[in-house]
Every structure is written in structure tokens, then in C-alpha cells.
Amino acid sequence: MALNLSTMASDLILQALFISTMIFLFLWMLNIPQKFFNKIRYRDKSIYAAKRHFVLGAELLSKSRLAKSRVEAANLAKSAADHADKSISIDPKDAAAHILKALAYDAQGFSTSAVEAMDVALSPLAIKSLSDDERSDALCKRAEIKVKGSGGVDGAVADLVEAVRLKGDNAVALKLLGECYEKKEMKEEAGKAYKRWVEVEPESARAQAALERLG
Image 1 (cartoon, rainbow, N blue to C red):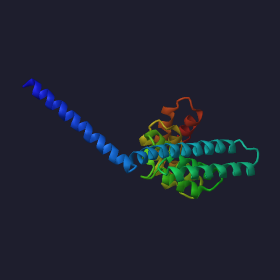
Image 2: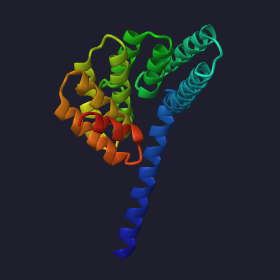
Image 3: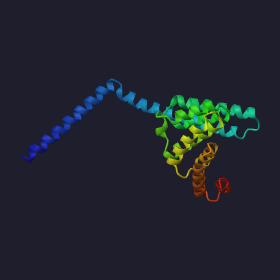
Image 4: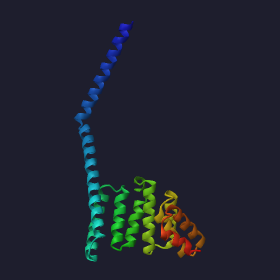
């Protein structure tokens, strides 16, 4: 009886291997395995290309901030935006490329376009690629651009409140939030933001001065 069971098990294993082999050969004849592996290789190459454009763009943006003339700075920032666009065309779900594009536009003084690029970075399309801390920093940057441009203080406050919720020790967000509340003549809220800023950066003379200014 034991011998029969062993023989049956061996037969079943051989049949399973035979069926698996036949299925694989059938798929191979249809070129499915090759297509699958080619797709993986293509995806890897695409991701590499997207990251390459992102790195080149980031380097150009960094150089633009050290440029000796406005014309040179603007040209470098424009090239950075071009590389960001190339990265986005390959991987539109990577928020980092959209943020790079926003920073490049901001460096050129195009506040509206910069905010629009940040909007995409923080949209459902790309936001999943960001951690909570990164989302906080991105929201803070969008608020900063809004304040400089024509986006208004109200929109900036909403971004900054969310930025602080995501990252309670975001000193830049707390500072800007306090300043926005001051512009809205909301001294109590401004005081709370500055107090939190002092708690996060107790050695900051600017934080202390901002809190003392409100009395």
C-alpha cells in the first residue's frame, strides 16, 4: 500500500512538471516571457533616465543660485525646468520632478507656474511618492511661493497649518505661519505659532524676537 502511494505521488509530480513545461513552452512560442522581461528592462531604463534628468536639473538649479549674473541664473534655471519636464514625461507620478520644476520656475520669477507645478506634486497623481515630512516641506514651499506671488495669504495659511500638522517641528512653516497670521491681524494665532517656533528652535534669536514683538 505504501509503495502504491509513493508511486502515485511520483506520477502526480511528473504530470505537474510536464504540464508546467508545456504551458511555459506554449507561452514562449507566443513570445510572452520575452515581452515580460523586456518590459521590466524597459521600465528600469526609463526610471534610470527619469532620475538622470532629475539629477541634472537639480545640479543646474543649484548652479543658478550661484550665478554671477541674472541672465546666467535665468538660463540655468530654465535648463533645470527643461530637465524636470523630461523627467516628468517619463515618470509623471514622481513628485520630486514636479517640485524641481516648481523651484526652477520660482527661480525665474514665474510664481503662478511654480504654484501650478507644486499643485501637481501635491495632487493624488504624485503625492503618494512623498513621505509626511516631504509633504510638509512641499506644502511650506508652496505657501512661501503663494505669499511672494499673488496666491494670497489665506491659501498659504491653509498649506502651513497642514504642513505643521504633518511635521510639528517644521520651523520654517511655523515662522511663515506666524508671519501670515500677523498679516491677517490674528495676533493670538501668530503668537501661538511663534511660541511653537521658539520651542522647536530655542536658540533662534529671530524666533525670540518674533514672539517678543507681539508682546
